[in-house]
Structure formats: structure tokens, C-alpha cells
Image 1 (cartoon, protein in one colour):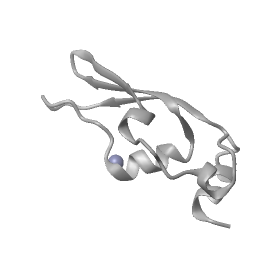
Image 2: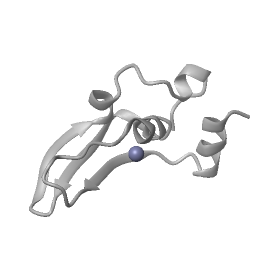
Image 3: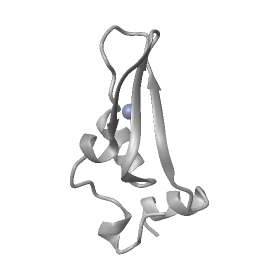
Image 4: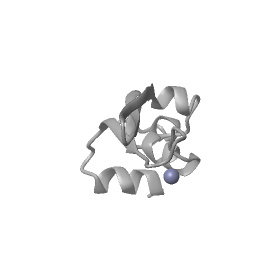
Length: 81
Ligand SMILES: [Zn+2]
């Protein structure tokens, strides 16, 4: 069993639909490459990613915008949850 399939089963085949990232810094902080890949294994491209600072929401994007042509369960023949 590959890692992504194992992770998916461990999560009970649940799907992430929304993520909020909060940083104290002045620059907007988007998820790093590793986080984007892990999100791609549990979320669809239309999952909303909210980028926030202490003052509130700075930007909203989607996983598909952050990681186009992502490798995920579909590439292995397993439909996304
Ligand atoms: Zn990360």
C-alpha cells in the first residue's frame, strides 16, 4: 500500500474542504510545497485556502491555484474522497 493510500484510509476517507493559515508575519504566508502535496491527497482542487494575519483575512485561494496538475490519488487510480 502506497503512502497516500495509507494516509487516506487512516483519515477515514474524509475530505478537507477548507484550510486556514494564520501567520504573525507581515508577509502573506502560503503553504509550503510539502503541505500542498499532502493537501492534494485529501482535498479537491476547489478546496479553499484562507491566508490570514493578525488583522484577519489577507487572501483566499484554492488548492488548484496553489498546486496545478497535482499528483494525487487519481494518478494512482484511486478516486479522491
Ligand atoms: Zn508546510
